[in-house]
Length: 270
Image 1: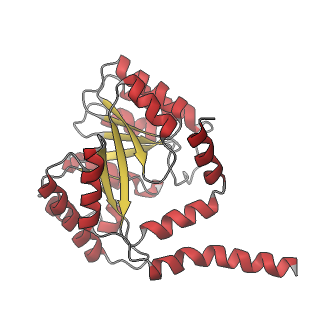
Image 2: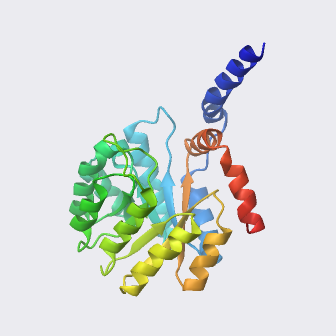
């Protein structure tokens, strides 16, 4: 019986994100823009990112990004728009249409096989880009982009390197910060690890590089915010929205059951 129960619980765990996708519509562009404006009133910069549902077409993704870009432009804030280049077919014409609103674009990092096209497109469009520390190619990409005008967002990275991750992701993260230290364009330090954030921000600040702490909606942030405030660094919140966000968030929470414990420890200051 216990084996049957475990099997049913496992099936429910993998079915739950799809169930949520069917019954929870997700926030639209206007709601996301309004939430970003609310965070701005509280002193946070923001980055909005559209998450499409599993069957979202390329045309729908383009239209959704164009709509939120227009909403953000009307708000006249400092919000960036994170876009997923593969979902838009790496189409520079579509991306220029979205960017015509005047809202700066930054490319999310997805799988490593998409990296070369994404880096090249960021250079072509002078858009921002995320560099995942776990990928072996990222150090070379940091050297390649160091003196480019595009902003860079340092992340540990969600998707593995097909050739094998670097042996020490935290050390690789700090290596990327060291490579970028001294550049004149913004570097976003995207991590909820307060020690890693403090060291990376220190490397950039000591070199005179403009930088900010970047945090994602829904993850514990109290201790990391304390680091940013103590170092005098601005904070930017990544605000995902759309029909695919809650299914994605639930799937990650189910896959990482340590997250509730982490949230409690962060709240209690442990």
